[in-house]
Amino acid sequence: MFRIDFNKLRFLVCDDNPHMRRILRTLLHSFGAREVYEAEDGATALEMYSHYVPDIVITDWAMPIFDGLELAQMIRQPESKGNPYAPIIMLTGHSEKRRVTVARDAGVTEFLAKPISAKGLYQRILNVVANPRPFIKTKTYFGPDRRRNTNSAYMGPERRVGEKHEVLQQPSLLDKARSTI
Amino acid sequence: MAKNSAKDIEVKAFATHQVITQPNPLRKVLRRVEEKDLDDPVARAEQALASLSGEFKDWMAIEAQRLSAAWTAVQNDGFTKKLRDELFHAAHDIKGDAATFGFPSAAGIAESLCRVIEHAPDLEKVPAELFTHHINAILAIVHENTRLDRISVSAELSRRLRKVADDYLAYVNRDRPEHLEVILAPSIAPAE
Image (cartoon, one colour):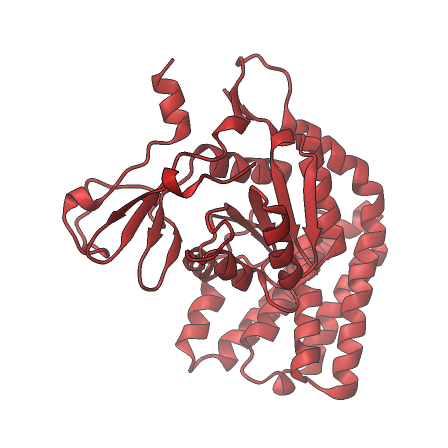
């Protein structure tokens, strides 16, 4: 069984609703996190992202100035001086499937639909810590691999052109840890 | 915790894309514990959330008041973009937060209201009663939810308002298949 040392992680929480920020802060602190930075709009979050270099970003979708989707797109700039690889967890009241697809295509790592739960948040954080996915860069996309699973029985067309060997697997940290025991 | 340096990042280039891998920069925060480890961070967090719950009713009242004020502004000045957005955000926040605050029926009604705002082709043509019934229902639930016998009433109210709103949206979007598809798609939000 694995646990996260939350006291070694730095979080950036971005939500325009002060009540939700308070709830997130409470949850993260009770998980053991010490460094939780808060922003109430996308522009402030981007500034704080550059300044504090958080390990994990948790952002709402609908926010003033620019929203969580735009924030994700601005973080996922491969040529930027900052860190374009930080895991982004989108926590939102939007609960339609098409929203998940749009968020995924903006480079969001995990999607968590409100209402928030301690278990749901913990699981998303555990997943981004223990199972990082490789990043993919195309003409139109930069972000974590949008394929979560490889299905050997898949019969449809390949969306990325190339041979089978072009599918590169990154074993999860959990699998690596298990294989060494 | 610093990110990996550029030399640790491996890039494999293919015809249409690059695959970028790097050692997990967060690996050091993961530690193995015994199965019998009694520390449960989720239970600890749930307990912390429960200790906040004394404030939830007040927070919910603030959210409901914000929604009411946004609707009053729309009634006075019409659906300008700014006022439409404020009404939507107020409803959207209630949709996301109300269940956490102990008002799941209010969350359902707010979701129904969000759908009307998002998918009605012309908000000025939506019967005002459809908005006022949703908003008044949320206000009533927030003010009356302390009595257990009211809870089943509020859940029923939520279901009926959703049905009326969905029927309206299905009718006004009958020639807009892309909206109909979204309206009829199931929600991915966890069940109440």
